Image (cartoon, helix red, strand yellow):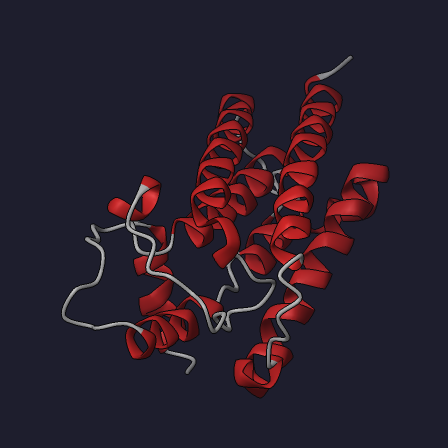
Length: 197
């Protein structure tokens, strides 16, 4: 088995670990049966994030089934860099699990917060304002490294929800007492997405 095939199988394994974790916590969060007004996301969110996510996952599926179909956007990366993507996938999955477990019933499938939302300041939220977005951004970046594909990287970096989530966070809680934040992926995406808002 060559390196491309091995990397592809490791990528499939990572997705097979990631998906059940996310599904489990989404199902738990959905048990609240609280209706969420997704119109608060706004047209920008509906027109960018969701279609970009769909394009990313369809492209990823195409790559996993037949990498030759995504060869038009392949980039040449050293095999060691691509293997570092596998390590990053493991780290992203660990951060995602920790984040979802800490977030608990506050998790939603949208950037809209629940009426009974509580300020989470434990776990990764002690240090980072948006560890969920950081974990997802790291995962998408790592997938792009493993696949050595610029198109997956482009689609995976469209994370405008961070800016909107930030504005909801500040308006919902006392902005004078936010959790501590240091420079991290979500803050970088916050800056980038403000250019489009």
